[in-house]
Structure formats: structure tokens, C-alpha cells
Length: 308
Ligand code: HSE
Image (cartoon, rainbow, N blue to C red; front, side):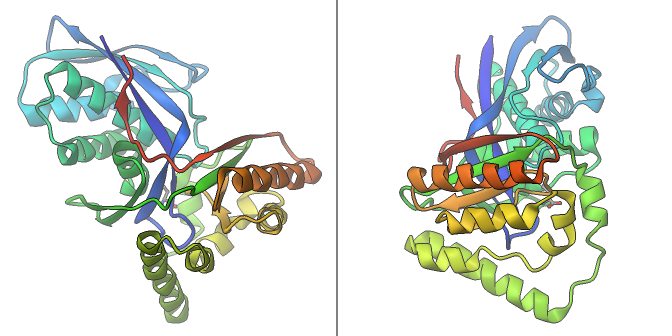
């Protein structure tokens, strides 16, 4: 039996809509894989989803990802999966992506590691498409590779791993709400004013440079989203109060994590991330709408890994 942990991830990272993401240290999902007598994929059990995810492998992101892998490897060997959800569903921290990534890494390990990381990425993305109807490499890629990842292209996948400046840490506030990515995407429309596009690609280029230069001030100035955040902020009650609290507590920047409802803040140290996270939690509690979880951790340098 092989067990693999794949971390959740923060996608978009403010200015990198659909192309930039980073891995968290925790939380994440664990998928175990065992060989099966016949060919194909079965899902033996799913733990921690309160019965909401499909056991049919063709409709489950983890199952479909491993089906894609077995097909690409042209193997008749079979794999049985058990999925342990540590990530909340529809939370904006890459829950479906992490399951797909953990599953393909576990199956690949079981088969003697025949697949490259790039093939695993393509299969994890195929799994997300089968399970969720769409896939964005900005969650799957950091969950697989770790650290910050820029996806220059999704199809074919062309991903660039970026450096993680020492000490960089993250707070993630997860309001007890669910946002379906499709719904959040429908808010965006399909047109962007040129001035916003210019501002956004200026920020994204500078953000990438700031990671190479370990320049926290430049990173802070670049953590601005003028395209998606203004249209999605209403999905999170009190979003602007939470953001203001994070910045006042010393965060370098704060925005929606992926399509929300989670909100992330990046900070120069774990202590500052903790302070920002506490402030975010207090500001969100003052809204009095629903509860929220908070995770504070370094940016996860390591992606999916075999744990037993
Ligand atoms: N980048 C996607 C979005 C979500 O913001 O809609 C995560 O893949």
C-alpha cells in the first residue's frame, strides 16, 4: 500500500488569475493506493467528505485522474484508491486538485514510477475535468510540485517553478461557506478593460521578479488584483474588512484564495502570518455571519509526497 499526501494550494495569488499558485504546508488530502486483481480503478472508500463525493471513479477527480494515468501508460494493471479528505470541499484551496494529485502520485509509485511529473500533472488535470467539468493548473501544479508555480499554458501544460523567499508564510481563513468555481467564474464576464489588463500584467511580472529577488516590498506592491477580486468580493461577507485587518496587522498582501470563499494573506514571517491570521479571524467574526477556520503555515516548498 502506498499513501501520498498532497497539500492544498492558493491559486491566483491576487494578480495571477488562472496562471499562478503556491502550495500550502497544510491542510491537504491523503490518498492510498493498493493493487487490484483486475484492470482499471475502483474507489474503496472516501473519508471526510460526509458522503458527498462520488465513488464512481469516472466521476471522481482522483479516480478519473488515475484512469487517465493507466490509459496513458497503456497498462492493464488495476488500482484501488481510498481518499482521506483533509481539505474542505468548494473552499478555494484546491481540494479537488489535491485529491487528483495525491491519487496519481500514489498510483505511479505503486506501478514503479513510470510517469514523469509532467505526465502526472496532465493526468491530474484530466481527472479534475472529468470530476468537476474544468481544471486550472494554478491549483494542481503547486499541489504536485510545491512552492510557487506559474502555468504559462494549461494545454499542453507548460509550468515554471518559481523560488520561495525564505520565511514567506501564509494565513488562510476559510469561512464556512461553499463557492462553486463555476459560479465564481460566471461573475467575471469575458471582457477586461485594457487599463486593468495593463495593471494586472504589471503586477504579475513584478510579483514573479519579487520572488527571484526576495524583495518583500515589491511583492507587497504586486499583490493586487484589479480583475477578479472586485467582482468576487461579495461572495465573502466582510471581505474588505478582513483584508484591511490583515494589512493592518502587517501582511504583505491579502486577497481571495482561488475563487473563494477562502481568503489568504502572505507575510514575511510565520509570526507575522499568525498575527495577520488572528486579525482576519477577528474581523470575520465581527461580521457575525458564519464560522471560519484558520490555517497558518510557511509557504509549502514541498508538493505531493509519499508518506508511507
Ligand atoms: N483560478 C481559478 C479561478 C480557480 O479563480 O476561477 C482555481 O483553479
